[in-house]
Length: 262
Image (cartoon, rainbow, N blue to C red; front, side, top):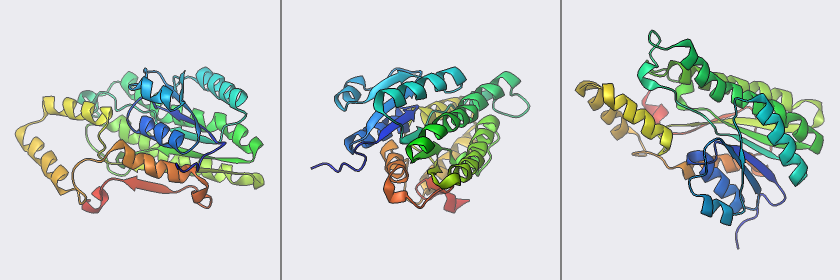
């Protein structure tokens, strides 16, 4: 018999069409949650999600009106909203991510999705969760929040800001006797479309020495290789559950031990 840890819980997962978001949606659904995936892209495995009872809604996380419409609609249709996973994010154009080459438009594009989108999600679900007596928000940050790289200025800045935003939301959500928890998850190298895109962009302009250094880094990850989206989903599910009822404002890495190498 499958564990129904999230029975009678409603979860909204942004960026849930693929990667970490999709893995999280499937795991929460398997454990009894009513799951709504919000994304601009179509779901990669639509049949699997339909079979799991997962609902899809179109959501541009950088749009304030989209957020208001989706949160209002989900809470009205399902009688509440208990879990928000802000997993939507973009890496931006890595080839122009260098400080001197980056345009203001590209900077704003990354910030609008990664930071503004997370802020809007937290803001819109907070009154719903407080009214119903509590909830859990999990924001997906990145190891890039801790370690700057010369080729992803906007991405690193956005994820650092998401980490700090998470702490502010956690403090706000703890006020007034109604507990809305908020924590951040920081994936390292995970087999997702984003990592594939970053690798492809870097390979175009990477010289042999840089490519060798990157490979040496991959080879040195203590637990080896690249993680799976399901590895991150398991941690998200824990933080979303009542098992983490006394955890808020915390940062968790899922990186195979990569931080130990720094």
